[in-house]
Amino acid sequence: MKRMNLLLGLGFGLLAWASIALGHAAPVGQGAQGPLLLRLHMHVNDVHNMRMTANQQITQTINGQEIKLNQTIGMGFRFNVLNVTPDGAASMKITYRSVRFRMEGPQGVMEYDSEHPPATLPPGMQGFAAMVGQSFTMLITPEGRVLEVKGMDALVQRVLDKSGVPEGPARASMEKMLKQTFGEEGFKEMMGQMVGIYPSQPVNIGDTWMQHVALTRGFPLVMDTQYKLTGRSQGLAQVAVQSAIKSNPQAEPLEFGPVKVKLDLSGEQNGTMEIAEATGWMRRGTLHQKLSGTMNGAQEGTTISGQMALEGTTTITSD
Image (cartoon, rainbow, N blue to C red; front, side, top):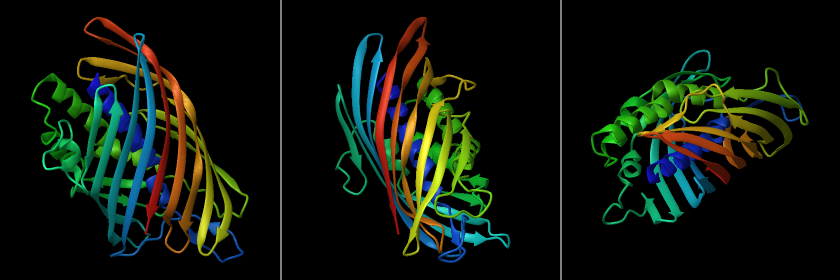
């Protein structure tokens, strides 16, 4: 159950990052007073550093037992633009520069900070430590369509090898889940859905547009998001975000070793983004998430049922 709690929290943390971190891929201005065409505009050898922090409070009531978790997931990234095609698609190398994880729950505190590493790695933190320095590449169009992801399968395997999970059914299940979500095809689906934030035409202040996301892999969610251009100042575009979120009923149950869990969650997300118009790069962003619902599953003939609630805030800063 401890590993299930950890993976659930990590999965929601990474989805929170996904819904905002590459939502930065945005605008090219058409003049201070004219409409704004939202597109990614990168150049070869561009380098951007980004830091994401997700603070979450998770409450689970499983078979009558309440479990409260407070966790922080922090990640630092470097984006190197390797190539830009004539039609503007950018090939980017994305490297994990730093990782921070802290979970406080009934079994105490689990914590790791790669920028201030302990002399001895705490149990269960080997996988987080292994992420630092790892890279993958992604090819993305100016409109936010992900054409290709390379290197995630190998990255997942290296993290798994360092995770400390011994060979056996638990490791096999963990590998399957990680590759479904963060392997190349799963990650392409997640990023491809999350970064497609752009309206089909230039927008003025006050204009809104919608995005529909339906994820089938990993932590499957359906999100309907309204974006609104609320202002433009000193080369930055301000965008408000409002999402309705629910579990994808068509998705398969999550697998945690012998445990299979079906989530039925719903809730909302709201926040703001500030985007540099000259480059289309997000400078700052904040998203607040609130989800609640049920979790039902089975383990070796034993039924697992309960409630789950998550409240969190994801912040992002970038140069």
